[in-house]
Length: 138
Image (cartoon, rainbow, N blue to C red):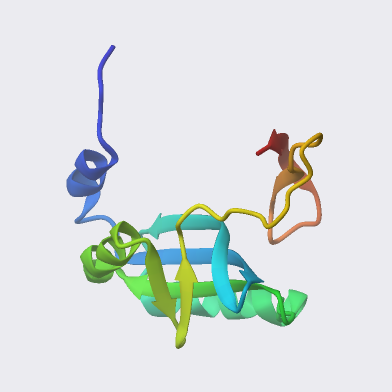
C-alpha cells in the first residue's frame, strides 16, 4: 500500500491553489468556544473570487449565530497556509477576535448509560438536499 501525506499533495499543487476556504461550526461551553466541525477547501480561485461566492451564499441563508453556536466562513490567501497550520497545531485558532479551541471537549456529567450521538449530514450550500449522511457516536 502506498502512503501519501496530505502535505505532499499540497506541495505538488501549490502552484494551482490560490486560496483557502475555512468553515467552522463551533459551540460554547464555560465561556469558551469549541470546534464542532471544520471544513477546509483549497481553491484555484483567488481570495476575492471565493469571498464573493461566500457572500452570495450568506446573503441567501443569513447569519448562523446564537449565544452558544455559530458557523463561520473565512477565506485566506494560499500563502497564509503555514500560519493557519501553526494555529491548528497549537490546538486553537483566532478568527475575528474569537478564539476557538480544537482540543477534545469533555462534557460535564455525561449520562453513563447513553453515548453522545449526532446525525451528521454533508449538504450542498447551493441546494437544499443532503449529499451524504452518517450517524456518529462519541
